[in-house]
Image 1 (cartoon, one colour):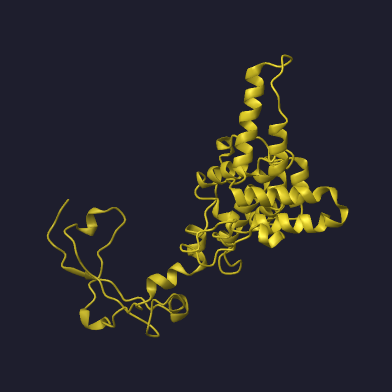
Image 2 (cartoon, helix red, strand yellow; image 1 turned 135 degrees about the vertical axis):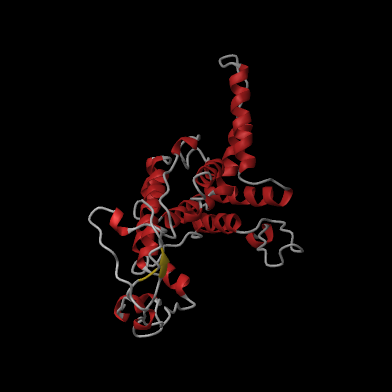
Amino acid sequence: MVHSTLGHLYLRYYKIEDRVLTGYGLLTSHTSTSTLELSSEVDPSDVAGSSPTPVIPPSTLSSTPLSFSSNLLSHIMSTPSADTTRPSVAIISLSTGLFNHDKLSKDQNNFSSWKRQFIHTLRMNQGANGYLDGDIAPPDRSSEPRAYSNWKANNGSILGFMGLVIDEAEQEVIEDATTAEEAWKLLVQRHAQEGPVKQVQLIQEALGTRYSSSEKYTTTSSKLTTLNKRIFGMGTLNEELFLCITMINAMSNVPELRAMRENVAQSLAQSDGTAPDLTKNPNAKKYDSNDIK
């Protein structure tokens, strides 16, 4: 039942201890008080178990305002509760079914295509490829424990996934790696060192392939197509590069040149090629037959 207006109801002020809210930047004074003025058209006597609320004169209430600090939002976001509810690094559920490639194998010399497929797969998983180059760095463990835990779990998932799509020889290379970035660098270094040498071997294999009545011509054509893709997948051949490759290959029968052969192959693989565009990249590292001679 609605009755006449009771008038204004005043709530007693509540003393708030500064040790509760000052730590969050909510209060700038030692204590604060607040008044709240309400009006009602509901008679408390109509509510079972209720009694009239005494009217408290305004003069008995303090009017000290509740003061908020200007950095409230930023302060709250930096507290552990923000890390719990909105961690800076979220958990990634890897969808490994997107990966469609043979296992990485040095014998197969398929690093170039394997690398492309692996990066694309992680990129489709919320940009997880950022774990390979260090773009997604681990958060501070003490200030962001939840985010750090998520990062560690994501890193472990990527590292495990990497191990499943490479052969046993490659697994031994990354066995002691603790991060996906570290394992990735080891694989890149391992396969970059022997690029030119392997390219020569593939060229030799291609030139030694012959059509035969003992094998379907379509099968032989398929082999040549695959070899061709692998050869040029390691880098486009030009006159100077081919010369460097043949010089590297010519060192293979001389034991005392073995160390030099490996160094030359590594230097060539880690350079920007035999003819980099210095106008676009003045700091490009050139490597050609003059460096070998």
